[in-house]
Length: 88
Image (cartoon, rainbow, N blue to C red; front, side):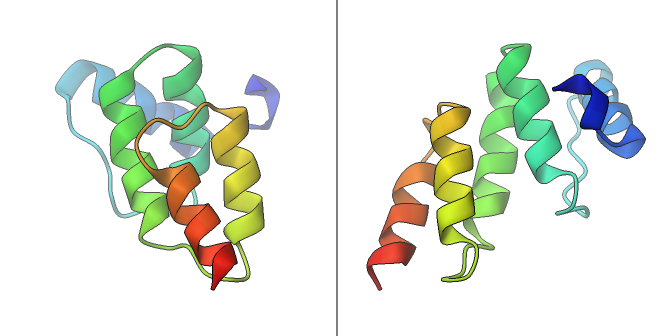
């Protein structure tokens, strides 16, 4: 799992650990940051980026995000939001 992460994602994760600040500019890194937060049990960060992903769900990416939410045990509404998008 860690071999495919972007350097920017790892840097953002470390920055959050030290400062508590999340970079909400980069949707590209959001999935990486959910993965890192899930694996290292950083629930605050996981919640921030799950909510960010929820605002970008479309009918085109809903299935992918639903599978992602299931794999990384979403508890902040991502799974439900993706499922709702599929029902439309």
